[in-house]
Length: 286
Image 1 (cartoon, rainbow, N blue to C red):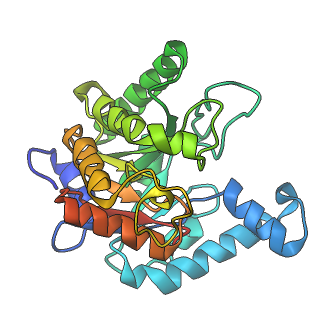
Image 2: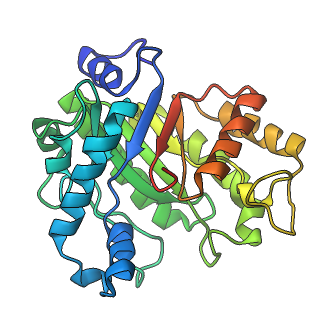
């Protein structure tokens, strides 16, 4: 995972990997999504969920689960106390983006946390810096140009701070439900093109975090499959290979909120396809 890197980037990647160089990380940087879950359980609007509930939950998860993980991904808004609770030898990734996006503006444009920088995240203990980006190769060129510029900016910051840069790509298409059959049809190409784009050297991405290139709910034999099947198992394996071939930097797979059983199925497909992924970052599936 660390050939040809600066000393700081090598140190950061080693910190979040296990002895085999595999990333087996736990994602607990959710903020808006976590407020919604707590709000449902507490019969409160998400915005009224006390911040302390999120802080306490992240602390407990970190204390109990990090002995089973190579690293934990947290946010600096509610997660720094949890970072102090992680098991010895467990690495720390910190998120740099604000949660969610402004639904009134087209393009799901990202925003960085106002009081943070890559350097400040490192001073807070980050071994690696993570940026989440909603991205679709089908989006308007003006929208994507803004996103490309932001990723270049963060990549330059991370290079200056000598800290690894993890870019999380959340794929979507304007006007389509992310879980719909319509999006499932185009997801393989959207994932492939995103991996290809952000492998380019101007972004200085060290590791891509991506969803698997198919929606498992539409793959033959999936535990979450419904009546409609878009891909046979052999077709799904080929789509995994095509996406992986587009990446020129290491990548890890995200669980993207599916069940643990479904994520396991998705990873088995990746292994069967012979894809050289560098690990996983698993949140809600856990």
